[in-house]
Structure formats: C-alpha cells, structure tokens
View 1 (cartoon, rainbow, N blue to C red):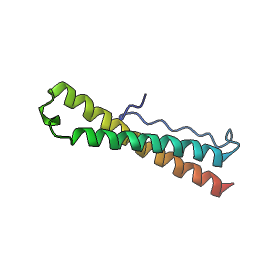
View 2: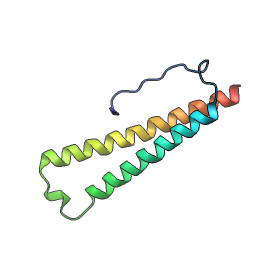
View 3: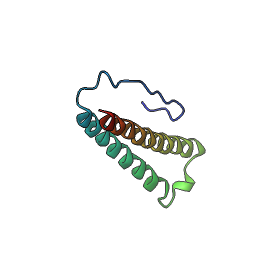
View 4: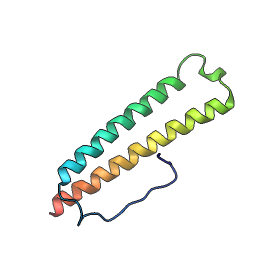
Length: 88
C-alpha cells in the first residue's frame, strides 16, 4: 500500500547486482501507477461525479493523490538507479 505522506529511501547500492533489471521493474510499476492515476482522473471528471457523497469524493481524491505520490516516488527511484549506473 502506498501512503502519500511517507517516503523511505534506503542505500542499496551494494546489494543491487543488475541495475538495469531494477530500473525495468520500477518502470513497470510506474506505468501501472500512471494508469491508475489516469483512471482516477477520468472517474472524477465524469458527469455526475460531483453528485457523489463527500465520503466517496474524499476516498477517490485520496486514491488519486496516492497514485500521484507513487508516480513521483517511482520517478525519483529511477533517477537514483540511473545515478548508480553512472557511478559504476
């Protein structure tokens, strides 16, 4: 589960053997997260969504914010792995 308020970064340079494989895995996760964010945005922009209860609106906003936060974290992680490739 992704929580928009928590970011954890670990120094894993010494334990990563195949940086390219890790980048590929994270890019796959990024694509899924981007698709989830797009789906949430589409849902929230549909006619009638504004008629949903406040509880539902808040839940859907949280899902969108969590997906956007995950996107940002995946992009930062990819950038860090790219630095590992350069430093190798």
